Amino acid sequence: MKALRSPGPAVLLLAVVFLCRCTRDKKAVEQQWSAPDTASIPHTGNGQLIRYGRALIANTAFYLGPNGTVAHASNGMNCQNCHLSAGTTHLANNYAAAFSTYPKFRERSGTVESLEKKINDCFERSMNGRAIDSTGLEMQAIVAYMRWLGQGVPKGTRPVGTGTTLLPYPIFAADPVAGNLVYQQKCMQCHGADGAGKKNIAAAGYLYPPLWGSGSFNTGAGIYRLTKMAGFIKNNMPPGSSYALPQLSDTEAWNVAAFIVSQPRPAKAFAADWPDIRTKPIDHPFGPFPDTFSTVQHKYGPFGPIQQNRSASQKNKP
Image (cartoon, rainbow, N blue to C red; front, side):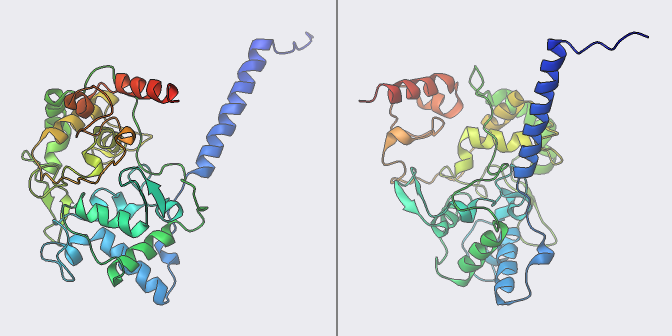
């Protein structure tokens, strides 16, 4: 009977790599945030406030749209058109870290901002509307809902899956013409040939939101930036896509994002944004810029050279 041989160094190395990878993946799964069950919302006065906050996020247009039952503060979109499933979906602008990370300093305003200020930014920019009363019942309800969603998230932390994915920068500029082809094949069925979206006949708001035109987000919205739009699309569009099972390649996501942000939409200037222009994101498409790259390159890329320039500038700072 032959003696069993000890595994060679290469086999042992592969085993160690496999174990490390499994441990790393297990930790990632453990750290990934998942929303609490709505059935756990208490049947108390605070629970009632939380439920109202969730309703405001899911059906914003009903309460605060152009024909809102409470006020007329938004353009008819719902918060969950960008924060999917009432802000609970992995890598779809969820609210996991909303309560844990605010108040905080934001370079866009150059000030320490409250969560209420951040929420009103969305009303003014992403829903092309106006700010709601920062001390009113609706704001209290939205904050209560976000606090409930973020229960158990330590202060100052962002769980895995918060926000959107930053895709690797492509070597070339994103191509709106190529993106139009992707839009026609993958997006038009829901959002329409004119990008105007599809209304929810049974309720206020949209089943599929407008991506451009008078009813869409304005040029001051964060998702107007290409990196934000491309990352959101990659992991969430078309419907049924996810981080684990995307339906578009990175290139397709960049290009269709470029097509969408090329289309006409409400223009709204926020003159106080980025008081220190050195902190502007590399894909912020409005000058002045802290470099000599063109407005077109800041909007569509390639972003690699801009990032390298920023890094060199930071390194050479006295």
